[in-house]
Image (tube, rainbow, N blue to C red; front, side, top):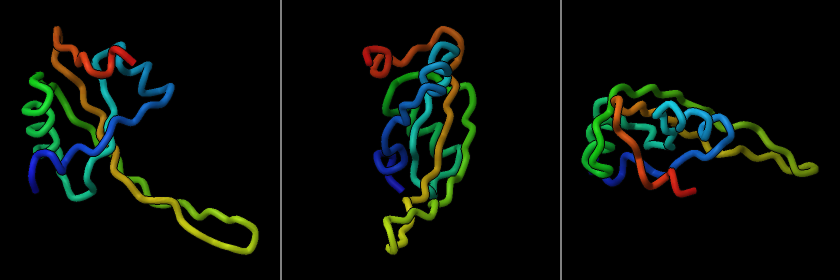
Length: 94
């Protein structure tokens, strides 16, 4: 898996904004990626030092629109904590 395929997009919620104050950033990542691949990709792409990576897998939820039944997409979330003194400038401007 190439480094650019590992990290898909930032996950921007109220809880993730609160975590940014402590240096924890939340991203949606590829479901096949492990913690080592996520850490390596994040350090190379954003040029910061990563302290820890926590992951969580989410299954798709059932959704209904009248008689039609569907599912939302399943995804993997990574909470990436940066080392002390490190800061990610890209998300601080939002």
